[in-house]
Image 1 (cartoon, rainbow, N blue to C red):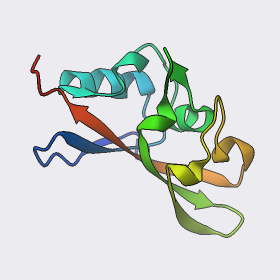
Image 2 (image 1 turned 45 degrees about the horizontal axis):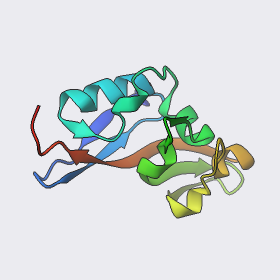
Image 3 (image 1 turned 90 degrees about the vertical axis):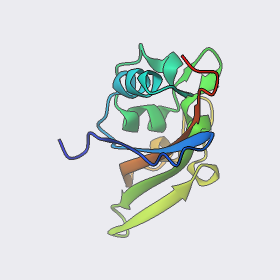
Image 4 (image 1 turned 180 degrees about the vertical axis):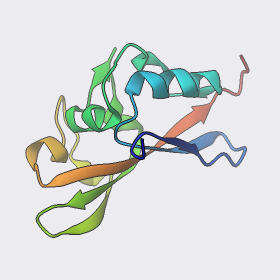
Length: 122
C-alpha cells in the first residue's frame, strides 16, 4: 500500500527523523521503532489506529500526546487543490484534537516525527 510506509533518515545522531505514511498502523510504528532502539512511540503499541487518525485526534497515552512527537505534516488541501506543509505548531494540537479534526479540507499524506535513539543500548 503506497500510504503505508516507515522511512528512516538515520545519520547516527541522538535523534532520528522518521517519515510515516498516513495508513501505517500506530501499533506497527511503535513496535518497529522500538525494535530499532528508537524511543518516543513505544507506549502506543496497543493503539491499532492509523497514523493519520492518531495525528487528527492527537491520541495520548499516559500523558504523552502523539502530537508532541511530530515535526511536520504534509497534506493535500482539497479547498485550494495543492500540497501544503504544516509545522507542529501550525497543527494546533490540543487534547484530543488538531487542525485536521477542526478543518476537514486537509488529507494527510505523510507525517515527520523525531525519535530519540536509545543510547543506553538494549
